[in-house]
Every structure is written in structure tokens, then in C-alpha cells.
Image (cartoon, rainbow, N blue to C red; front, side):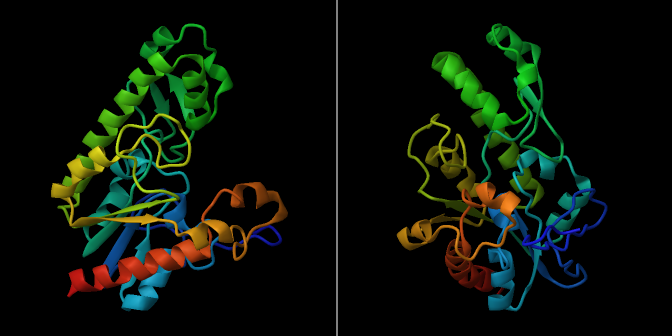
Length: 271
């Protein structure tokens, strides 16, 4: 049941995946474009997220496979959703942060990738003074570890970057390179590694994206315009309980700008 004032996302499933995606459910028996990504692709609090806007602009079925706070593990460990993406004529993949995936230091929930599950022995040895039972979310964990020791945190950040790059290359190979990468953020990708944990996608820099270019159709950067950044919450649909979460997300204008930039590229690729 939807809370008063909240948006109905018409949750649905595709194929054999156990993940609930945003609906209404679109048909899979016609040519389609699949959209993979996190909260922005899903369109939390947005009546018409950019995949829906692109469907209207291109008259092509667009399957929204975005998931709130998703990481790469969600796609790589779910054969059902991966099968749907593999069958698409084209995939648009939002660049997701490196923090929401299992690695040699910690494990995350297989579907709710932002949830911290456990610290590995390696992490416990690196931070013997930390009680890891107090953490439930990866971002909170990483922020605390960086606060305690930037030098030790750099080891973790390096591991996350290396793991993210390897898994992105693997995922692009599985999708046979028919992928348009999308950087959607308040800013352009940093030129050098950034461990500030501000904004996002976390821990991703331009050198990492450049390493992916040969394996993808292209990369489009969509830093929010000044107008979109200053528009804020107007146009978002949320309940009183969701107000604090809504304040941190991009608004409808950013989705309009993204759709306007992507639609002609998608139409050109589909011919």
C-alpha cells in the first residue's frame, strides 16, 4: 500500500529475477533498450524518470532496470536480470559508485547493495579498534574508517577501485559492448582519485572511465546544469516521511536534460 503523498512505482519483475523493478512492466517481446543503474535511473520520487522520457522521445520500448542504491553486484549476481539486459538492442548504464559491492574487505547484501553485512578478517586486522557491528550501511562504514585513518583507508579505496574496474569490464563483455555509459552527477568526473566520499559516484575518476571506453559504445557526461541544481525539490513526489531523502536527490529538470541528451544518441544507434 502506498503511503499518502507517496509515488506509486508500480513494482514489477522481469524474467526470473527476484528484484522488484520500477513499472509499469514493459513488454520483452519487441526490440527494447535496457537501462541499468542506481537511484537516479530508477527515478525515486520522480513521476517520469529519464528512461520513461526517452521512450516517449524515441518511440522505443525502454526497460527500467534501475534499482535504488544499486551496485554492480546486483547485476552480476542475478542471472535473470542479466539475461534481460543481454537481449536488449542497447543498454544504457549509469555509472555506479564503487562502495556498494562485496570485496576483500567487506560483504554487502546481494540485492540491497548499500547494506553492509560483514567485515572480512582482512578488514578486522587493518582496523582492530573498530566494532563493525555498529554499521549497517557501506557509506557510513567508509566514512568512519576514513575518519580514523586516511592512510589505512587508502588501502580500502584502492581495492574498491580495482574491483570496480574489473567487474565493469566483465559486465561490459557480457553485454557484448552494446552499452552507452552515463555519468550522472552534480559534477564532472574528477581527473584524479578522490577519497572525500562527497557526492558521487563514490571513488570513481576519469582514468577509470577512460579504461572502459574501448569496451563500450561511448560515454556521455551529464553534470547537472546550474538551473537543475538550484531547482531542488519542486516537482518531486514524496510523503512527509520521505522528505529528508528527497532533498538529496536530483529533480525532474535533471531527468529532462538527461533524456534530451540521450534520446538522439539512442535513436542514431538504433538506426
